[in-house]
Amino acid sequence: MMSLLLKAQSLQHKRMEALRTYAADIEDIDRRRHELDLASTRAWMKVIRAGWATSDLVSFGLKAPRKPRSTPSASAGHDHAEPTSPVVDPPDRETDSDG
Image (cartoon, rainbow, N blue to C red):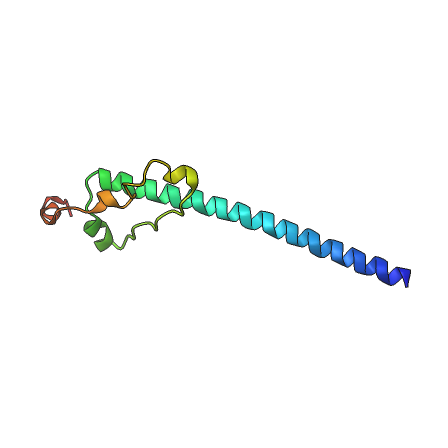
């Protein structure tokens, strides 16, 4: 009977350790995903600030990055401006493109 209990405890220990590892991995993946979303938005905004119209970029087959998930530190003090707001261009902007 004791051997059975030890086996069950060992199995339970392995299962709990696997669950702890999984939870830590998911947390790390979420953090990395957030960092990649921010990097993608920054790269997109550099292209926009360089003078490209969103419609031109989309016509090239590029997609605007999805909005990064909010974090308390990222949204503090920036409630009035969203990252996508400078992307809107006046209709006559397209005539100035090189493309």
